[in-house]
Image (cartoon, rainbow, N blue to C red; front, top):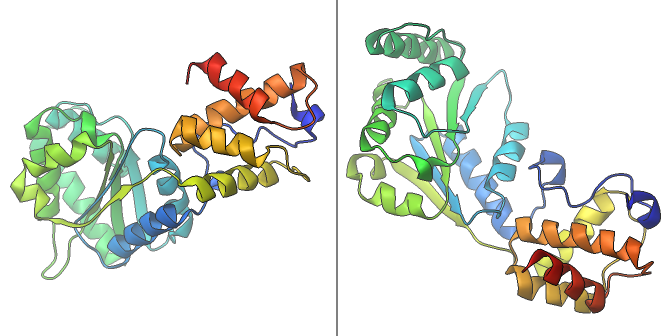
Length: 266
């Protein structure tokens, strides 16, 4: 609705995680580098936590772009709130196996064969589990940990990346055998003011903007309202652009920003 008015090629503040909209703030860059380290050095477990909306999934999507598909098989589980055996079946399916009507023994046997086949072909196997904080059954975490028992003499055959909100930290703290295998963990912080400002400019330029649209004072108000959380920033900025069209604003100033914040209840 507002693309022509603001002379944009596409919506700049969509909330669907996209590798094309990966903003390299210092903390997002560090998160990406730590995950790459874990994969390249065949470590057991990495853990990335953040408040909802801070960009965990976007980091993972960008991570995939760095991986050579001939050297790394990457799979991702997006809904891990499953019974232990059902999660194993989901993992096997993601890695290319056939879990139909298989017993747990057969499932694990298939997984082992896939992992060793990848190893023989010189490929690492990486499994990312998103929303890992929703796993409420200890036995499910135990099954995940047991996958790390697939090893050669000197390295893991599977690298796990656990993604979740802060409760994941507490959940893992109570699971010492799994906690001890975490080689890298990182908590993704919200953006600071300067990064928020640069984030807006990045998003707008990526959408084809050729001029500034938000005043600095409006960005300051935005930062104070959102706490630097990208998901919230996107929601309010998208609404600002809509209000700007309806009010025929030349810029998104504090008046438009305030109206958007109030409309969305932030």
